[in-house]
Length: 344
Image 1 (spheres, rainbow, N blue to C red):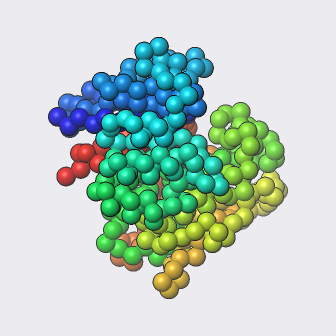
Image 2: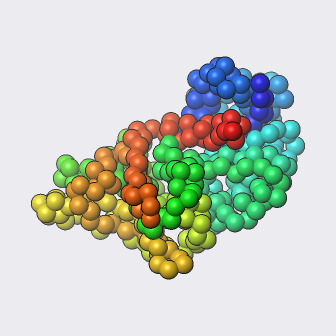
């Protein structure tokens, strides 16, 4: 039996669902692959809760459901203690990072990831920003300390887009990559195209259904998809991309009339992320793109992510996922944990 002591930073939509998935799959993991997973610390804005013998996950979930922070745990809560202090002071094997981060500096997640790697802890993250800002540094830090940095949950929700590219296509050259990497924009464009909604109506519906933030600017202006494209470039293409080199155009100017006219010509408009091989580099872009209706990305529904890899010898490989809630993203974090400890 392999026992793994884990810290969880961030108990929002993804973090809470990770705890739920862990509770659901804990016995199965124990009996099928001999993996005993214990959460010994959790952190949110209120502080932390830490117990060396393992926290009561149901109690943590009940606290969050009642609107309280994890530091309200009557036995193990420590109000005001930061996530970084938890990582620095707690004996654990792995950090799960699912916190929101500032685009300017990647904090607080970046410092916590660096601290964990420096303590020879594996890291599994669903947080894009630290990777976009510091991918080479974090990867070098993990390698220097002999631990793994896993981040399949950062791109396309629960779709194993990174794992597919890194593992299954490791021996081939990827000449072009395409992806629908942002759910908010795909939802809006699909509802506009299929039901004739205006941009404003589709956005309001996306917000009401939980598929868009109150401030959707990072999504509708293309920045979220660009972040994910940079991560794919580093991890799958081996290309040290930066965010500023991504050619960027959002969807705010799209009208239902444009979409209807395109549909009449057998076309669908999608916010498409692309990486095109040009010599020894890749040209990166995120922009509204007309696709033939038979294109695999054109066929994706409102709540689907997808990716297409064009290769030199393995043909064209596409994969997609329906993601109605963040549950598959949380499950992707568990998939990364299992890959660290149960992969031959």
